[in-house]
Amino acid sequence: MNDRQVRGWSRLRLFNVLMALLHTGQGVAILLLSNEATVPVRTSFLRFDEERQALETATRDVADLQLSPLVALFLFISAFRARARGAAWREPLVRQQSSTLDQLRALVGVRAERVTDDRSHRDAPRHV
Image (cartoon, rainbow, N blue to C red):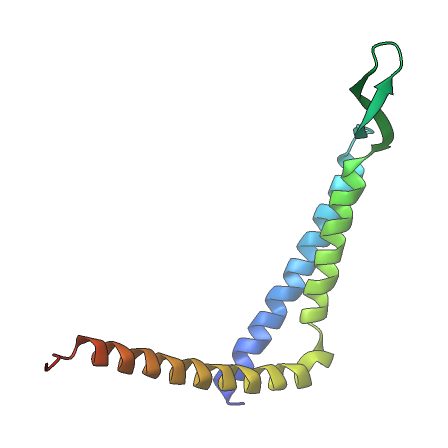
C-alpha cells in the first residue's frame, strides 16, 4: 500500500471508532430516556362459530413488546460492528480487500470494454 492508501484507511478507522462511540451513546440515551410503552403483538386466525355455523376472524394478543430495548440493541450492534471495522487487527483483511477490489475493478473494466465494443458494433453501418 502506498502512503495515500494508508492515510485513507487510518482516517476511515478513526471515523469508524467515532461512529461506534456515537452509536453507543445513542443506545444508552434511548435506554435512559425511554418509557415503559409497549406495542401488542397480535395473531389473527379463523374460528368456527357453532351458533352461526360460519367462520369468523378471531384476534388474540400474544405478547406486549417494548420497542426501546430493541432499538437500543440495534444501535449497540451497529456500534460493535463500527468498532470492529476500526480495529487494528483488521489490517491484514484490509490488504486482502484492496487486492479483491483491484480484481473487481479489472473485471468491471473488461466488462465495460465489452459493452463499448458491442455498442460500437451495433452502431456501425450495415451493408446489405
